[in-house]
Structures are given as structure tokens and as C-alpha cells.
Amino acid sequence: MSLPHAILTALLEKPSSGLELTRRFDRSIGYFWSATHQQIYRELGRLESDGLIRALPTEQPARGQKKAYEVLPAGRAELERWAAAPQDPRPMRDVLLLRLRAAAVVGTEGIETDLRRHLALHQQQLAEYQDIEQRDFGPGKDSEQDRLQHLVLRAGIEVETFWIQWLTHALEEFGQLSGHEKR
Image (cartoon, rainbow, N blue to C red; front, side, top):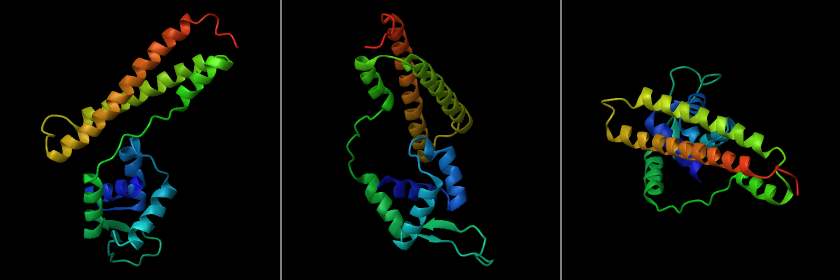
């Protein structure tokens, strides 16, 4: 049930239209909680029908115009309730790790190439996060909101750093395997 809470968070940060919200997801929240544009629009409808958000009044007719949404008091209360509730860590589910386990019994064909591809993707993501950090969290960005948002970004940086280190080690180990033959 976290997508509605991600949307409530984004709308409390800044009332937005569905299109603006999907763009913001693509640039920020989507790095750690992904959703398709269709899912976001569908959830906006649910949140509105549940009385947690409302479309802001407009001066022009609504036909063809983007609706901007804001969070209602009930939506803020729901987000406060959810943010304060304990959550257990989720178990890791990673296809690459499962594929490595399978390779141990069926052979390593194609795995090394994919490890290198994953390494490049994680290096690219780390560089993007570091660019965001430099751009958005320089000196003077020390409000409570800035510090908490920076903490979330730091989690992304640390996760990417972990994967880069692990993949580098995995490739070293892979290079020591005898022939990478199929079993």
C-alpha cells in the first residue's frame, strides 16, 4: 500500500497535476519507489474518491486541462499514521542472484557478460545520484526536509556503492572459475 503514500508525500511537497506528478516520480521518488504513469493516474482517482486528495479549483473549463491535486486533511492524517507505523524490512529478491545460484547447477553461459552489464548500470546510477547530491544538497541545504531528503538519496548512493563493490568482487571470482563450463 505504499504507492498511495508516495503520492501523498509528493503532493504534500508540492500540489501537482497527474502529468507533473509522473515527471516528479521519474526524477526523484521513482528512484526508490517505482510506478508506471498508468498506476499513478489510477491511484490519483482512488485517493480522490477516498477523500484524501482533491482537484484544485480552476478558472477555466476542465476539458483538456490538467487537473492539479492537493492533499486534504484526511490524506495528511493517513500519511502521518502510515509514516509513524513500524515496518519490517522486506526480504531481498534479486533475479541476478537467483540466476547465479542457477548457474551453479546448470552452467555459467552468459552470466559474466551480464555481470559486466549490471556493473556498468550501477556505475551509471551512482554517477546520477552523485550529480543530484552535488546539485541539490550543497552548503546551506540543512532544513529538516532537506536533511531527510538527502538521507534518502544517501541510501541510494550506498546501495549503488554496495552493488558496484559486490559486482567487482563477483567478476574477480568469476575470473577464477575453471573454464566457466556448463554442468
